[in-house]
Length: 183
Image 1 (cartoon, one colour):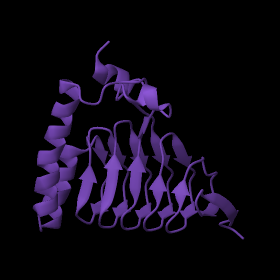
Image 2: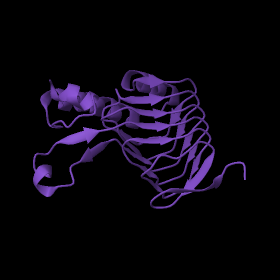
Image 3: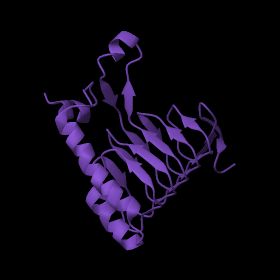
Image 4: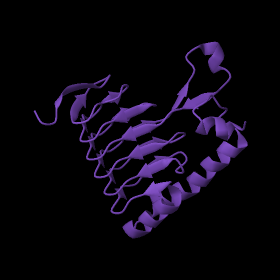
């Protein structure tokens, strides 16, 4: 099985594999084009070429770092502020009407904890799903295999290490639910 197939299946893979690095290189060209483009409508056209899916009325304030692009889905009416990082070795999906603050980081890859095993330089990537109508505050870090439910608010500076149920306000490091949005 190819390293890319292992990556796509959520298995341990070698990230320096030529097929994987070629996808990243393609992303770098589109990233540079996007980050240097001033015209908003032209940036949107670049996003449509770069990302797996882009919904209407979606806007990203540059600069953006996106590792692959082909694993990034933005539904309609998504807003992402400046300086975000998307390590999309696995699928990253952001639901409709979601707002993402500046410098938010989405990390799908993970590495082995055992130092001897880590020397193999393998990664495993697991998806991130953000529901619809969410508000993700600035400088939030979202780790692999996380789902944030619909209508959530994640407080600035939080590190999301566990799934957040719908309609929750969650903050902190590690991020935890402090109340429901309806409270």
